[in-house]
Length: 253
Image 1 (cartoon, rainbow, N blue to C red):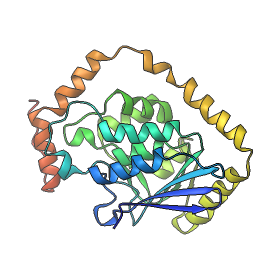
Image 2: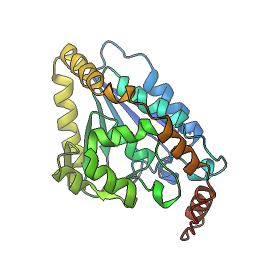
Image 3: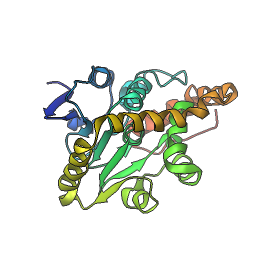
């Protein structure tokens, strides 16, 4: 069974993450298939790209069982390639978030141009609870979309935030009751598909380029802190505790 399903409906291309039994956790195979789907040439008739997850959860982030086998070097590797492909996609990208979007799943949703979420969904980065930290690329998207206050709350506490709160703060575009999600998503997607395609491509390119100012900021010292956290004993303990469904015992080592 393919871990990514691609559907075409006229000008609308939908990419489904198809690993519902694992909460659409991003293992290496799912990441590879996502990168291939996102990197495929845009057809002349394509107007909108939609990203969705099968099952009750949008995406639980990087597969913890797979990730715990490596200490990490501070680089996001596959997931960063996937997220950058969303940023650079010339089409508007819509995330339809029916359930929780956690860690890499949160980044995946927030890298999309428009988020349409169910009121049941939660968005979060639980890295502090397992001894990890986001790298520069991942953190700058949080600052860009959420702003410093909500980014600090999400990162430092590690508890997921309800979609209703993010919508009330103007941080995601749409948030509706679960039974209205499909209708609202269709309305947004159809509106995009009906708009002038050259205008949309120009606007997408403008918004991406104007926000690249942070790329020139020196951050080698911050990168070193991130790598130290990811290679720490605490990180190994945190991931092991999460897999064993127990409370981690951190020692600052």
